[in-house]
Length: 608
Image 1: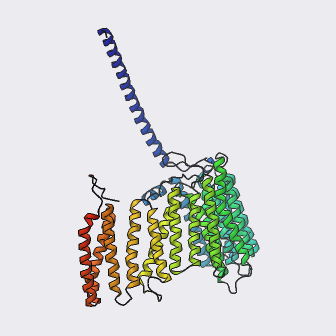
Image 2 (image 1 turned 180 degrees about the vertical axis):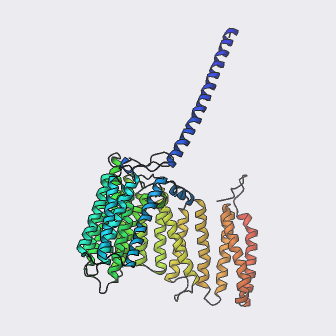
Image 3 (image 1 turned 90 degrees about the vertical axis):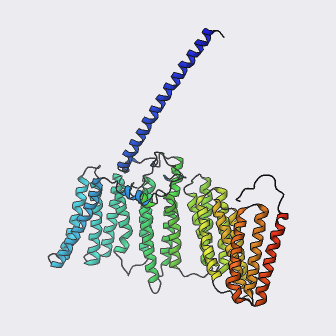
């Protein structure tokens, strides 16, 4: 290469290097500006109010700025954990000053009116008819003032909601306290207030206003409680209110309304069931209330899932309005599907169980049927790519199955049934990588461990030791727990299961053999053999966990020899145990090196 060509090439290389360096500096500057812009937008989003209800966002936006999945009604499949208490308090404190003044102001105003009414009653200034008239006038003033305010003002919704609460209180006083109107008039009036509030909420796209109407409507049968009435009318009315609220949610996608309907609807049905069961004799129309429970279960459990299916296909046509930002932490940090899906079947089952006294074999069949239905729904939703709704249905199926086993079995047989279900849940969770089923399986085994500990700490049964049905069932529970350890993740939990199985084995041998004549000697014999087997297995496999377990059992065995056997066993047994195990352990220590695999020249891993 000529010198001129070399100089020309060097010049080009230097030019390219300067250009690359300049581009790098430009890229670094742009990245810094982008980070600053994201930080500013995040701060502005944190300080801003929740989006207006009439905006109808197609998808909820998380705090990181990414849109969440449309399959789960605004909940991503990998949702973050619930925020800490500090973050919840901060989120509640981010309401605008106008919001705080409005909410606190309307509350104080209504309390002041109540105190004024009480004072006039104590002084005898106003007759009941005048008090009711003033209450109606106050509700009208609040309603008229709210309608005159601009649509964008938060105070408008506050005044309209306050007017609805005032009308409810006025009708309650007119019927229950003063008897100025009939039951039909008061009931019809509260129904009109409910319909008017919901209609105003739909017209003005105000979810908060709909909450007042729906909760007031659900409370109407109890505010106007009449012992002479049957169960068919209130049950039909509650179903109508729940159905109307679900229809509004279907059309508008107001999550706060659905939450309020689930909570208020099941609270209303629960109160109705308690009153029905407290009556003597039981009301003859309990079937009407049971039918209402079934309708409410179908509406409240099915509406959010069916809407999620529609929204997954056309998210723009089925928008979702999340609850206000300050309310989301209270609802579980955004895990909408779990609260909505799991509440309805559990409340429906509990209310049904309270309402009826059925034969013993009825409830296992009912619970098993419910478990099968929800297991099939979970499988179908998983295939339909709804990751937020499939796990809660699987959780309901697991709980229903556990309850069915509780009703059908008892004692050690129940522990076996729960253990089988726990192993199935853990295996399914590992196969599908589903944390909800994994947690359910661990929770079920925790209950099994507590039940087994209670049984082993009590006195032995009257049957033959070791081969009795109860003893074999307890041993089967330990075997199922060992099987669960093989499918358990993460690794420390598997070790915890194995440690629990070992502790259960030691406790089981003591529980079964100690009551026998010289039974402590048999217990020590099994404990010593267990320690020796674990130590030999750990040495041959070069695994530390069996060796540590063997050392722990060996320590328990030696401690038992000195603390229990010396005081409770005859001299011949003491001599045999001490001499026999001393010689056995010495022999094992002498023979073990020859039984180990030949060294490979590399160190074995110290752990499992």
